[in-house]
Amino acid sequence: MGLLSAEKIGEIYGKAIEDGLYLKRSVLLAGLAPAYLASLEVSPAPAGQLLLDLNGMNAVPRIIGDVTPLHHWLMNASFLSAAFPDRQRFYGDLADEAARRAEEGRAPAAVPAGPAATDQLPERIIFKNDLVPASFVAGAARTSLSVARMVVPQFEGGMARLNPRRASKGSATAPGG
Image (cartoon, rainbow, N blue to C red):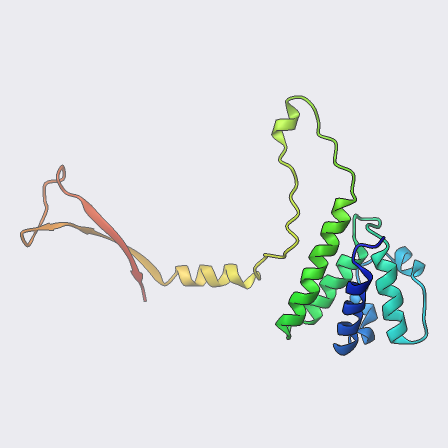
């Protein structure tokens, strides 16, 4: 049995044909091991090749490098569909499902015994890319230059508190310039 149902593979095939992804095979398969790619069946027609690729990848939960080929293909399809959020979400959601199904079939990892077991945290698979672009850090640094922190003494009866034991100070941030 495959990672996804035959109906879902058919749905992926139909949407990939509509989106023109059948003409972008090299991009969709980029990053997969060449030995694995050589094992895929070949068709002279691009649309037929797409169906062969989807069915072939659906049957393989994992290859060398701990990669799930169908998940990899669907993530690349999601990235290529970025201009169409509904299509990007469609491929991304199915990529998550394929990854979960591949993970379900995996044998549980052995837990080390003894004190070393408490030193290690288990790995967690998130299935979503939550990275921000590197430009985010530069923007945050640039923004921080335009903010100032002010420390203001409190006033009582129109006069600043001068007694250091009783004086309290307030603080605030304000745009600098």
